[in-house]
Length: 69
Image (tube, rainbow, N blue to C red; front, side, top):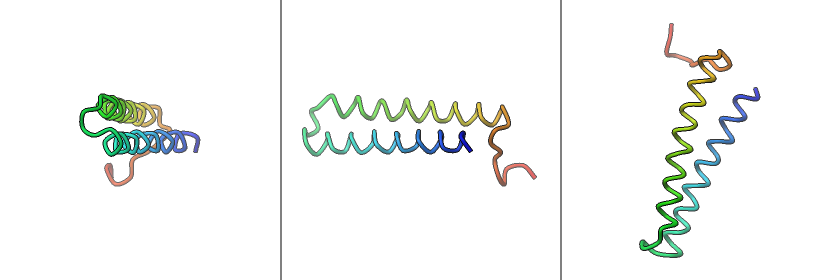
C-alpha cells in the first residue's frame, strides 16, 4: 500500500512540474529558461518513476496485471 502511495505522489509531482511549465509559458512567454528547467525536471521525475516502478516490481511489492498469464 505504501508503494502505491509513493507512486501516486511522484505522479502528482510530474503533473505539478508540467503545470508550472505551463504557468511559466503563459506568464513569461517563450523566452524564459524556467520553462526548460521545469520540463527538464518533469522528464527527470518521469525517468525516476520508471526506475522506481521497475525496482518495486523486482522486489515483488507491486505486480503488473494483464501482462503475464
